[in-house]
Length: 613
Image (cartoon, rainbow, N blue to C red; front, side):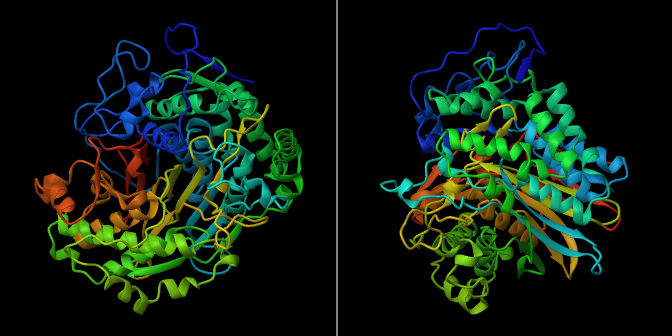
């Protein structure tokens, strides 16, 4: 049974909840904002979130948040109202991720003699404990791995550990709906995260799973101090998952005192620790055909879900061939569909037709071309990307040079276009990168989709089930239409870049449909302007949103000119100007290879850090 210990003096009175419910979109945005602890240039929405998110609309409209000493425990709050700066870490062994305790778990494996694969799984497992607001044992993961195996020299390998819709799924359960509900068992597909850990360790690991999962088990059983950004996301979820019997297990597991833990409180979860122990002792079998699998089956049946033991038993992670595209001498590699990484490749393929390097960085014309390329890429991705076995066009055709040249011709350098850019959505995800002195590098991404996922929790085991099925389409005949045994369009994508066939950078920018946009922006800054790994993460970002609107962070004015936002609006871009930088624009990690080691960088938009030795 989960419990909360107190790291500081506090009352035992549970927080009061307003009676109003959050809308689907408001919750997703609130959870996304809550994942960021602080960033330069202003405070975040933490006071509103900690106070119950009484004015979600105000937060969506980007109203400035007041300073509030009452948020969190102790004599101060956790807002960071002043511009801050991070320095990259230079070392021969590195880990970078969004939560410091998880980064230390990965580093611990390499100090024990393990490699980058061991470190990746240790970090991923620890993240399910210390950052449950964005990922969990009941989620999915993917990886891009530069390592040598028994088949030959070191090369890049792709791992797809995403799950499929239950075979017992009934299409009529979704009749009359415009989209798959986020917060019940109808959004739950087979969770593939544990299978990804097993596959990576079996092929490339050097340490036993019991050793690799030990830091995560220790954190769950002995407790960890909740970090500020995680506490914010937790508060948003505590409001979402309440008021109905199907959320009782979530409340008992993650809010046993009737509220989310605050920054600095110690949170423990014996159920989570026990689940991780069973996974380690059975090399994952307990999760897919043993004790935990039977518990998942029972929980699904209790609340009318379609997921069954047979679905779990049939699941396998798959090793896949990455897809890639050259951009200015750098080759960006992505996981093939059902992942959306192809959207980043298409955007960069379109941008090859324009001389961005000769343009003023962060200027309106420079931003305009990238935004238009991304809109074109999303138009195709949302129309065609699905489970690879159900796509009606070939990946090769979407990446065809002549086709991308034709698409680039649709861009007017001075005017925003309407390319039917689909309906981008928000999401919650964690990304980690690891590298060791032997030259092994891993980009690994893991997610519940939105926050804690569906809100469905397996009682006694600490397993929060994801809601990845919400990415299915309910449009009849769509390539991504929901169906039994099918994988949904998947937002989470690890990134990897090579140069002349040599590994250059393991990276990623997690956060729903921001991810391919983040990948493209990182590579443009690196390849066209020579910005260093920390700078490409610190840089302000833009994001194409629903209805063609464009979200923009503050900061473009510093290098792009004082009128950059006004100039974009004059071109026809409907802007949504954010006053602060936040996880709405993704949370990135980079490990860049040097001749004798690495540069590791971590995004200011999260609690995390880069570490090394």
